Amino acid sequence: MMQMQYVKSMLLGLAAATALGAAPAAANPTLLFDVNSGAIIEHQDAFQRWHPASLTKLMTAYTAFRAVQAGELALNSPIKISKKAASFPPAKMGYQPGSVLTLDNAIKIIMVKSANDVAAAIGENVGGSTEAFAVRMNAEAQRLGMTGSHWVNANGLHEPEQYTTARDLAILVRAIRLEFPQYASYFNIEGIIAGKAKLKNFNPLVGRFPGTDGMKTGFVCESGFNLIASATRDGKTLAAIVLGAPSPNERAEDAAKMLQSGFIRAGVSPVTVATLAPYGDNRDQETNMRGEVCSKKAKHAASDGPAPSEAGAGPDKVSIIPEMTRQRTWVTVSLGGATGPVPKAMVGRDVIEYADVPLPTWRPDMPAPVGAEPLAQGAAKARS
Image 1 (cartoon, helix red, strand yellow):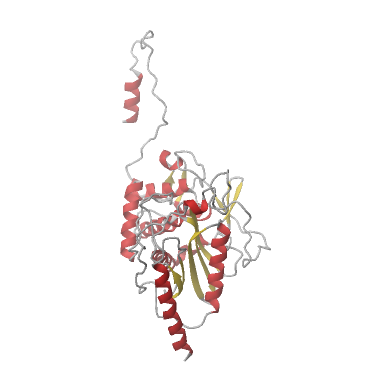
Image 2 (image 1 turned 90 degrees about the horizontal axis):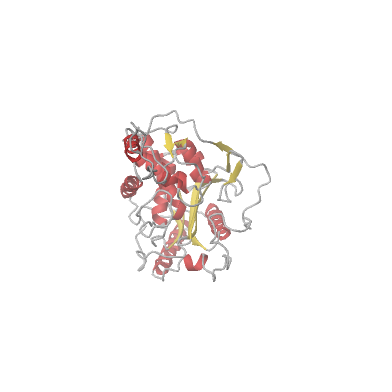
């Protein structure tokens, strides 16, 4: 009898969510599900198209894991920072062009620091170029059944044509956790040490909310504050997806409340991530949160200061998440140590990059010394 009542209430909830899906795009998509079974516990606007911001880095990591599985590179393979990758805005590590780190350290960095330069470098080295890696991301998404997603870059910096949905992100989370359980530790690192810098994970649930084991935050003005948080208790793993929150604290609060509620609910949902039917009249219209989180009228943005960052401007105090009372666990990352094979996409493509400095030429009144080549010609030979 209780099971029948649960199923009835769940179906009523799905009908209500469908009605919510037809509302204007000011919605705040959320989804709570069981990672192992795929059963959906609650959802709202799960098919609403949304800019993923740095949640993109989960797709980047998954695509890299698939390349490792295919033998194209290894975790100790070199990831070289190009001039293009180094030029991306923060969050970033600030490594100089030509710097090399391992794929292992690169993934740790993008999961904790959410470094855009390092994520771009992963894409370039695994795919051969940003564009080629995006093709691979889209191919993987299509294979998984992520029908509402399109990827353009590896780091999540805003592109109008880069979007996903809460439902598609749930599919991605399950693929990462179920296909690659050996990589679970990448997603619950409390902080990294890089040189003299100590960098905390942007996700305040990690190390504080009981059972938390991942996964990733994301923010650009157009998306608002996004979070995927997962936790395991008594052998049950749940994941909460929150898109478009107005502040980092609110995305964490919402995710923690969803997880807390999910762990005390009884019964099993008949609807899964795979079987949930699309809904929402405006679901194919991307939502732009810039006015709500980055304008002068925004509740949480300084009226005359810079736009909020992914970590937010204030302290990460959230009522349902206890403060950390022990020492934070740190993982050290560094450049170097790349003793593994060169990524297959980069074999034979060791291109030397030059700074954007004009080539010098001999002054008209000072002819080149006897036997010397014109500088421009000599430089051209050096590049070939």
